[in-house]
Image (cartoon, rainbow, N blue to C red; front, top):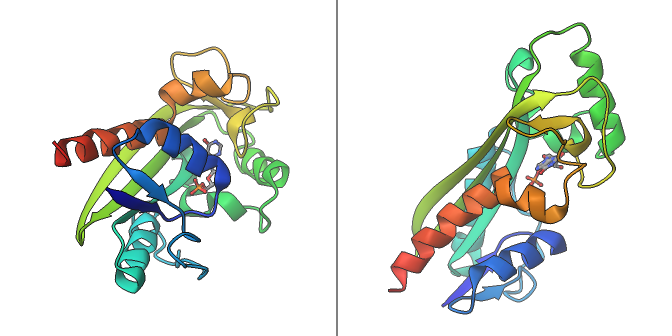
Length: 192
Ligand code: IMP
């Protein structure tokens, strides 16, 4: 079965292709002739995920899936959330971290969660799959791996930030991995 992953992120494509297995032929946006910028204007993580998948289905008629993720900080009422990628006004990870830490200065409640929502549109029928990992925001960055907010995120039950873990260690518990696993379980049932 052919499925398009509505992303331009090579790293995500590789990760998903490795987990999907041989029953699916993963197509990129370029493979299906889509060079359009996908809409991400809904104001929520599930909404943006849905917008991207719906766009590909509506304009290209290809079964597909899209993801959207973000970091939600309890004391900041869910910020940066859907604005995670450009929280500081730029896409610079260090500046985004700096702004978050400044906004949390003197804040005792450091609870946060990473969320990913995958939206699958299979022959026009939509399903969403959510992955969540709870944790705490540290007072300063620790570790050099990963990306985004990884250096300041300590997942619950662990003594290393996402940036101190190997890719494989993070991949066992991450929000993205959890949502992806749910989607693959669903997809696998569909082809049996
Ligand atoms: P995306 O929707 O997966 O591209 O994620 C949007 C933004 O959320 C990223 O640019 C990061 O700032 C943040 N983010 C999402 N997932 C992670 C993660 O696993 N670690 C750190 N930051 C993340």
